[in-house]
Length: 217
Ligand SMILES: O=C(O)CCC(=O)C(=O)O
Ligand SMILES: [Fe+2]
Image (tube, rainbow, N blue to C red):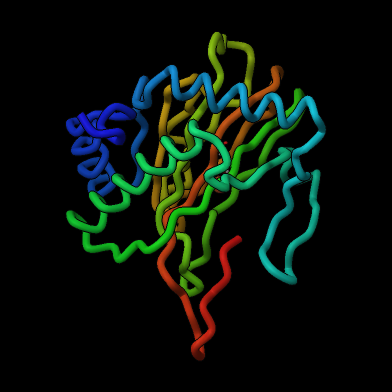
């Protein structure tokens, strides 16, 4: 069994591709190896305790600004800095390969950050990418919270791309993995009652213009 296969199984990956094509989004409970989720959670909690996370903003490049009324999480970009990160990133590289092979998406890069939402934090409804400026193609979120209970809040809502009605409410439980089309699927994080840890990531296509490679983030 190779490393990516020990993080999630091939059958689960096939289900993911089917749902992404049919609905534009996918959610799988117990999708990722729990021991790996535990290691990643320890890493983000340690960063949070050391005050080593950055307040997350909205917009990119010069449009970047801090808007606590829109999002209240603190983040740290993955940088291959630990065994757990390397294992996670290699599993995502396998998923990227699968998506490119089956859907011809031309994804060329994956960027991801740890996110830590303190109690009271939320992320208002948004799209991760805007049509026309497409460079984030597929959004992913991996949840890292063991013992999440009803009433702890922090669910992610997914809205129907046609009617904008809520179609899914996902508790951020360890091992749950979700992905969706970045330009089409409006989503939101409800206020959390407990510290909430996750990894948000994006498969990107190169949106270079005039010979300049579009920078990540
Ligand atoms: O943590 C989540 O459930 C979603 C986070 C999100 O939408 C984002 O970081 O863009
Ligand atoms: Fe998002």
